[in-house]
Length: 288
Image 1 (tube, rainbow, N blue to C red):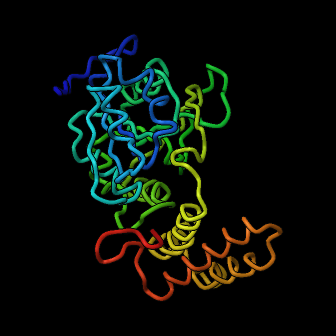
Image 2: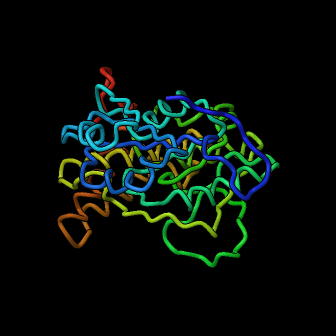
C-alpha cells in the first residue's frame, strides 16, 4: 500500500491520506468487522491492524472481508501499548489514529477529529473525541491532562519524541503514563468535545474468568508501577497501601466476581512489590 504524506491547508476537506488508522486486536472477531465496516472500504483511509496472537480467527476473518487492510500478526500477546507501538513505528503519515477494536466511528467523524489536528498550530501532540456523552456541535475543545487510550489521535513525530507507550506495561495505565510524559515534554492534549466515537466498552475480546483475572492482575501491577515511575508515591499512596486496599476489598466485596477482581489486583500489586515484571522472560504476559 502507498501512503501519501501530503497535507493541504484549510479545513473544508483535508485529506485523510495524512492519516493511518491503527486497530489493536485480540480475539476481537465479535466486534472488529463492525468497527471496520465504514472505514476499510473508504479509499481515503489507510487501516493497519496489529493482532495480538488471536486464537479465534480474527486475522483471517479480516483478510477474507477486507483485502486492503494491512495486518501485522504478533507471535504472542504483547499487550495494548506494545502492539500500538508496532503500528506507530510503521506509520509514515503525519497523524495516526489508535482505536480499540470495539470503537465504532465513521469517516466523517474521523475527518472532524482530524480537522482539529490539522488546524492546531500550537504544540498539541494528542487529540481525542468523547466516547461516553455526545456533546453539542459547537462545544469548543478542552486542553486536558488525560484522555482514554481507547481513542487517541497522535501527531506521530511528537509522540515519537515523547517516547511512545511504555513497553514495561502489558495493560492498563499505559495511556495515563503517556499523557503524563507528553505534558512533561512540553506538549498539550486536547479533548474535542464536538466529535463523538461510540465505545462498546469491554467488548474488544470475549469475557472469561481467566481473561478477567489476567486483566485485573495487570491493573494492580500497572497502577503500582506508574505511581512509582512518575513520582506519585507517598506515605498514603504507594504499592504497599495499594496492595492492602485491594486485599481488604477482596474479603469485603459483596459478590464472587468483585472478590475475584480485587484479589487479582492485590496479586498484581504484590508481584510488583516483589520485583516481578509484567512480562515473563519469554515475553509472554504474567497470568496468561
